Image (tube, rainbow, N blue to C red; front, side, top):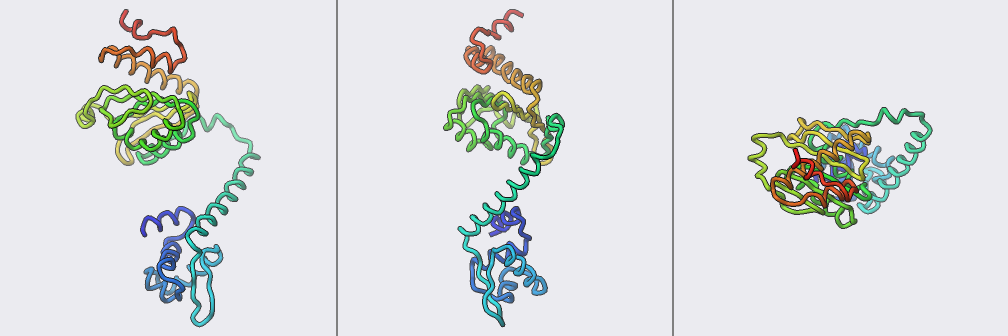
Length: 266
């Protein structure tokens, strides 16, 4: 119930309105007094709450003295919310399209907090069309499991690098197989992700509010991030005795490149 109330709040309902609607789903029709008692809403506030729900089309009142209320069915509620928010999105889209904006001002989006970091990474994976390169620790890879599986099923060309031992491989996976807890005693977790070679997310992946990262489509940053992952893979090949060139060549689209030979010559 609490999760449903939180979800309804995200669609603009107050806490009391969400409680009243959920109460009616469990027991209807019901009077304002009954809803007040069942939902824990003060009697002084419950009728204003029900009036607001009526104006939103989410409940319907019938009869008088006492007036009783019935809720919109869950399936109709979902359809109602989808339609109303789609209309709002279309209006917003039309309004924004007519604004004169400096696109360069949006080159860097700062991401604050671990939850927001994972959310942005999930969104980027879902919208990727062709390629995905990612360097991350086990915890972050696990958090992205559903999205990475979906991306693999969509046929995305995926390259995954991690210093940590991973539970699952996605696309071409290279891992040192280190224990994450032991690694954390030395380093703080970091993430680098490049989708379609034009969008980059990179930064720290500390717990809770300590995470700081950026999302950008800046070409220079994307090239630096891609090269960072390539270098990690090349060094892993040297230390773990495997040929990194097929992966590096695929990422760079350069079948002639042999970065490991260049490093070995130094």
